[in-house]
Length: 190
Image 1 (cartoon, one colour):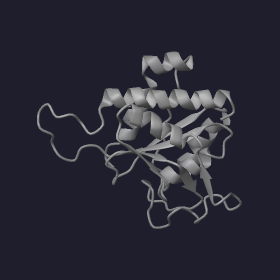
Image 2 (image 1 turned 45 degrees about the vertical axis):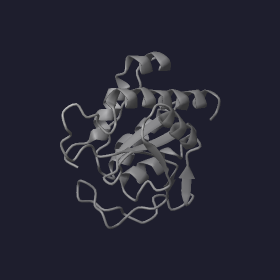
Image 3 (image 1 turned 90 degrees about the vertical axis):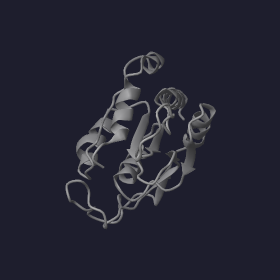
Image 4 (image 1 turned 60 degrees about the vertical axis):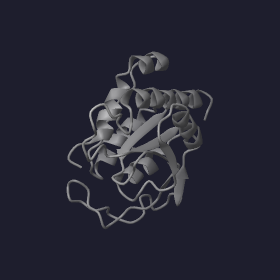
């Protein structure tokens, strides 16, 4: 994608004063390159800092609403190269790892977003691209982890005054509530 709305969303969320206040400080916002080597070079060092919780975002080109990913599979696609032209080195992301990892926080996140009026669905397929690969890696950590796929954004012009598919203020409040839920789960061993 030429424009990454998930990076913009993560930055907006990280700058919310209410979220900083609730978390007792600024959350770390990390934007990964769309490249497989970003996982060992950027994500893994950040995970080594033992975050209390991890909330990840990515764009799903086919999504019409937010999708909370319930699981990540230990599979990569050799069909689709990353932004650098590199393909996954092997089909298994972790040759000795489980076939999948799941997020116990996913049902609560879906409920929170629905309560806030955000169009959302639970998804059991994070894809076979970098979203799945980074989620699978993060789910190996002993903290609450959640991946949210967002729609790519409007493809057509809306009439003047029409509401966007994802209202930024409502979505920001809802995602801040999800982030608070993750950190509460971290405090009680999720």
